[in-house]
Image 1 (cartoon, rainbow, N blue to C red):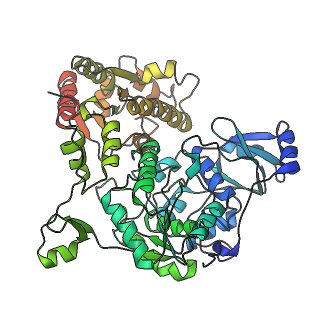
Image 2: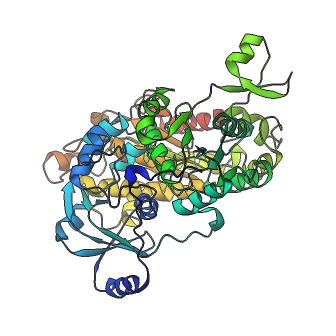
Image 3: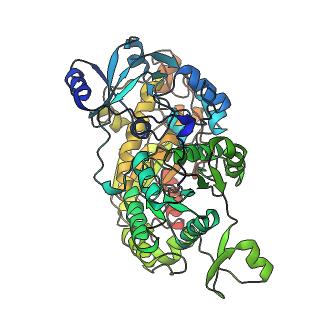
Length: 570
């Protein structure tokens, strides 16, 4: 059995135990604390146990810039993704070099202490252009980055506890645990399989072929941390992974481990990063699929990355990282022989083949309560998906009306709310003025406060949609990046942006409160459309010109869209 070295020949372990841990726990009550995001919690957890070896801290400025520009740490070790800890300006300016601070999760549970060694400013455009190859806020990470603090911090870490996981703890394994299990299997080669989706028969076929191709063992290593917004929830996926592993994989050749990774959806760079992580867990090979870690399409409807970019970059560096890419041509099912074969081979031999698209899975099977065929997925997977599926006309969705002040958003929202309730849907209406008096009371009208207001409403809306409610949000929401961040909080296809369009002159005529007049006279500062810009949606689902359509006709146009999309029955 070959011993796979950790990346950079360094095994990182940031966990402290015994007396040192007890001393830190005692000191915590006297130290300054900061709450870190769920993304940073995931990063901290994987880093603490050595999954990001040789990285032993959130990146310093020198490491950060080197990784962003050259995909290498300052010492030259290949590392394609920046791992950083963002903080707000107010917090950053209060930190003193050399002081120890407590890192707490979003529930205020202390996870680690950090000695502050660096506080530095970062640049969104610089990072996004280099790492993600785009600044399009339709990319989920770009949209999220707009909400991060202005500074990154770095320094020595001591981790006192990992996040508690009560879902399938037996499959949440550290790198040394996975390596021990793989060693017991006794194979020289290990191929890892990364996924963020439910596994069907084609994935099973690919993993089993990969094992045979390398004459080795398989590490099933699905991501259960942060994936793409709108993905099938991790609980459903973990149930599927577990049952497939227990019933359909050879335990003498397979290890299942859940990885609490926060994905970046960074395409080619992310594929390379995934390979380094799997090396740290003991793999010698990794299956790299088409459009690996791709986030879908940009605001112009084009894929963010080419279908084979990830495979090409991985192969360019596979010798250096010590993990070889395993790739396959597209597989299709041939009923005539009852097997999956490569599409090119099927076409060459004149075989007829079948496949089921994601839309067909939803529309032709799940929606009608029909089980997916066994050639496509295992019966247990079909059962789980069927149990968790809710027909589209009972699913939640968010109507987000955006436009200049006095463009007609609130009026349209109220009419649409009545129309939807008359069709049996329960509706929550979040109007900008009402939200300001309750949910966002105390916020001002600076750009930062406006973004906070939009994201607060977006969070509430996402929770309503998640629980299959209908929510109509009527807010000016002038900033495109903030609206896209809300879009990324909600399952794909369930955020319906409605651009309520009216020229500023028309909005002024409708302004019974005289706000535009006061803004032009300088009595109100930062008023959208006067001295603060409104960024029009680039590709909204619905565009309404309120100089042409009356409020009732505008609401009916939205209703017709919802009927066409299947959210409302005629």
